[in-house]
Length: 498
Ligand code: NAP
Image (cartoon, rainbow, N blue to C red; front, side, top):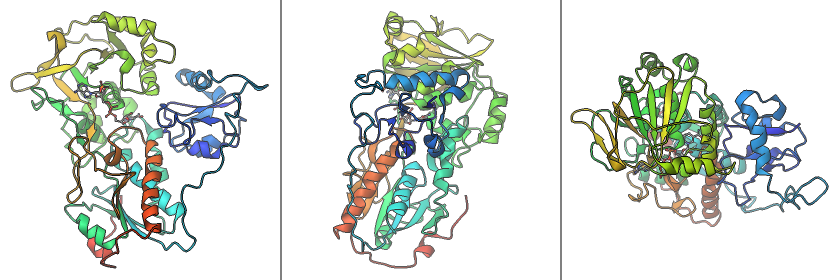
């Protein structure tokens, strides 16, 4: 029996490189890599060795015959990825699909390459994949800087607490914090405690992995009313982020509208409807947990401006939501296109996951019904205004329908913020770069480089590209000469724990 990759796949391809029979795809050099929602084991080729399960940083890989309950679906999901392969040989495999490609040597580092001193700003996944790459492939010394007193970035403060396997990747990153060639400087903010110029003068190269820490705006009336808040605030709140107050999220309304259907919207909907007892023992902030225990929230509406075929969530996350027994998941069938799309969806389409859900034409002027908590998916509904005078009363969507709600959470994406001293593209909320290079000696990686999309593992290839650009310039002798040596420790303060 083969192994199968399941819901929490982080796509960083750690499993691909250890598979002795190349049965996990897409591999990083295949065109689909980065576009599929997860990676898949070909059950026809898997030899059951378990190397992938050992290497997986998020515990997502199991023997298919050990999967229980809702997780059993992943045996078929893995196999389905290979269903279109032309069966041409005795094993039913497409020609050469599992053959090894020729080795690629896209980095040329001379044997006498001198170690670099590199500062990496940001301890989230993007920064840590860059650190890993530098430490494992060069003799570089790395100073790792974060403005917060605890390392981890979005793994610590962004991943939902009911996803402990995903949070586990933080342990993989944390092993580099104590690496002999790493200095960790926490509580140091670029622009406040140290400037871009200071870092450029003292390090051979600086990599900014500062993420996208603010929220995109909707640009509609009522957005700043009390009761309207960004999902970034809610996510930070349940993760105990030091910048967000324990009472930042008001749970006194029975209905909450979440604008957006990305995985962040799903995270927020899940946590707000969760049984608090199920969250006890997770890394949720104790204050958030205690407020969830007295929460009045009964219904969360996930609002999509497009149809069910174009929802932004990934299939594994929606699948997990459909399998929750403590919460009803309902589709608002207010528009005939919704049922048509769901009924006509092919098995692999996103809309097909909604086929077995209850459909209802919801009366949005009435309060949510009592009984089980529920999540309602409302498609084809662009938000037009958040209504209310001194407090959110609801949200008006196209066609004039007003969804009565005491809280509106805008989960329409993160947005990068400028780093004083570096260029910034206001349109995209990113730092302009070419392959991660901003200018000689200054690089970016992660969401501040490519925009706020893609899960944790997407940062591995992103970091490889950035570190590649840095090393190319170093090897070509194009890094600016360091102006000042030493005194880095004084400049960046003493190491603080986390
Ligand atoms: P996202 O996936 O880009 O979703 C943004 C959502 O906001 C979309 O539904 C989008 O609709 C909607 N939206 C944007 N502008 C809007 C507007 N003006 N009016 C109405 N709706 C609007 O962003 P995200 O949820 O913040 O997630 C960011 C990344 O992190 C994603 O790659 C996500 O998969 C990843 N992530 C992964 C996990 C996980 O794996 N468990 C958890 C959290 C985040 P349209 O599609 O119509 O534009």
